Length: 87
Image 1: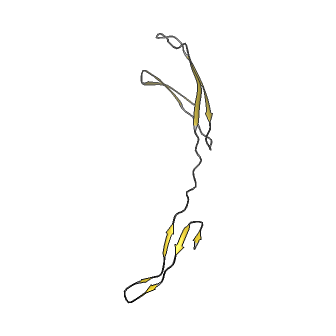
Image 2: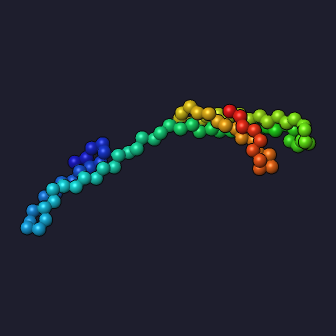
Image 3: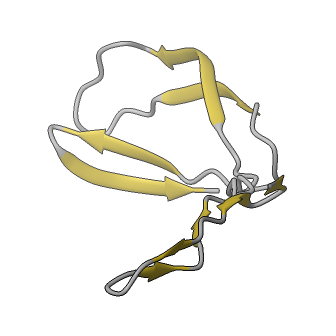
C-alpha cells in the first residue's frame, strides 16, 4: 500500500520463532522554504581611482530574483576593511 508519505508493506510469517506483522517506511517530501536571492548588476565606481579625501560614487542595480521578500545589505570594502553598510 502506498500513500502521500511513503509505503507500507505487510508480511505475516508465523512460525515458532518469528512473527512479523509489518514494516513501515516514511519519506515525506520536505516543502522548500521561500528565500530571497539577490542579483547585483551594473556595478559602477566613479572615478575608479581616488586620492585620500576625494569623493567616489558607487552605483549598482540590486534585484531580488528569489521567492520571498528580503533586504540586501551592501558592504563596501576598501583594502579589505569594511567601510560602509547600506540597506
